[in-house]
Image (tube, one colour):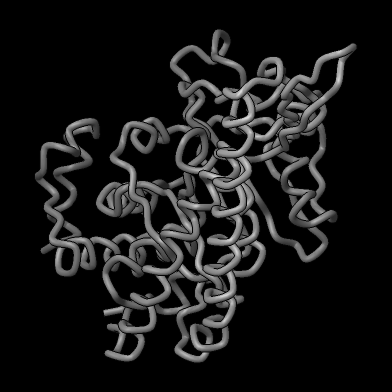
Length: 334
């Protein structure tokens, strides 16, 4: 067994942090969606007009009247109330940082946590991008109330699976469209660099962010391989076997970064993760040292999914996977 259960104090602290982070994230997302920008009276000729500013764009809401005055008053009051709520909750989360770290709950490495927070902030995580690979274990252990051994979670890269079938929302940060995914990464760490047409970005500490997608049946007619229109942006690498992950049930959870602050992560179902890792462990083209680690992760995640999360490997929600792969579950759960 390559994991340990949280003790009572760790469980209590984690529950408190999660219960506080949920409302903060909801309030922060509401503010970003509905209350970013500002609202002003602008005089044009002899009349005043209520205008809403979004970045460098302005929208006219009509001439000054009892109705537009009520609109502005409601907007100002609600915006102020929401900002106060966000600030109050953020202070309480900040006060928890040291306690979370002292209890050993700060699990997600610093760079990965910052990248995931940025992707969540702009609305990419859980919509166009999903975490696959080793970092998914932090979501599984958080839901199960266990801690995986360091040998299973140690990594210096994070894999982001791009679901190109999902249309990019207009609400996504405008900087993504002009700067691309690499631009977002540089807002997290200026040292991130990626060559044009490359699927990988790396920072000065040697930490990798890989953008991957499923290999299409007809790659010559495949859809675009970049998440943005930026010429210099990262290009997703097409990899065989990822179609299973794209079609798999998704798994969302609140985890805690190494800085002690919570974050939200969206990845794939732990059963699918375990089966995919089992498949990778049998690939002769994969390095032997990696195949052995794949098997260790597969067995540990499968056991946690079965014994702690009550998940069954013969469930209908795994019907998108090849039947041969699902039958391999017996090898993991024997």
